[in-house]
Length: 60
Image (cartoon, rainbow, N blue to C red; front, side, top):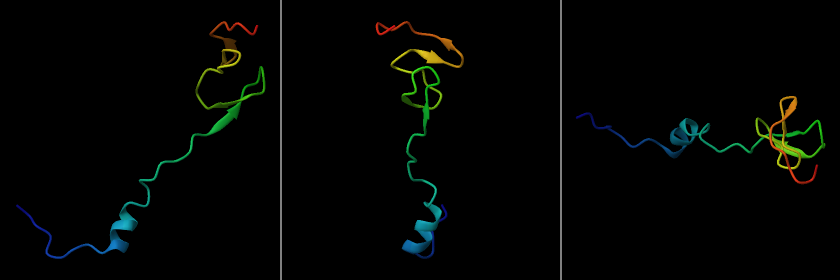
């Protein structure tokens, strides 16, 4: 089995892991009710998604 000859430095490990961080969810705005909604999700307030109402809510 292959074994590393020397320890990788913290700098080298950090460079490799630089893309592993968690990115925050992108927010868009609902065209019906103008509330902020995560992208690619149905609006929880009005049930609107991609040009049509998918879920009927009590507020309507």
